[in-house]
Length: 125
Image (tube, rainbow, N blue to C red; front, side, top):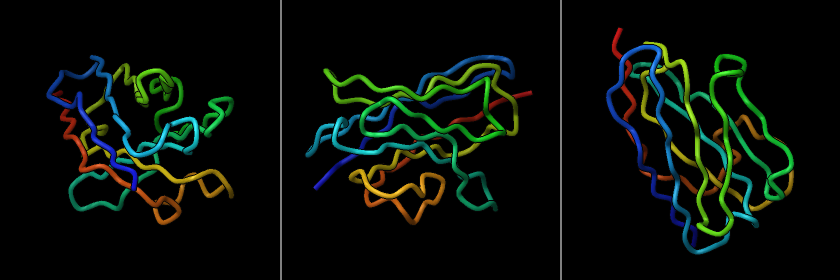
């Protein structure tokens, strides 16, 4: 069983930065495809970014490309989401997701087997 715990959310002003962390246990991140999703109130869950188990390939949503970067630390068994130039519409609950490698539906929430509880990110204007 894989457990994911997010941290690093908070309240920042527009234009600021945050780094979200996702700590994985039960399996190494090198054996998982990892991703970040977000969900704003009244909206569907939205893909943000994903990184393959090898760490070689990343995928980033158009809405955050150039501002957000996903990365992983094998030694710490962590995945990160560096968020820069934050905008009010980035406000959402951000969740970490994971699944064993295989397939390529990286942007689909239903493709992932494991989820964290989420961390709130609020951007003030």
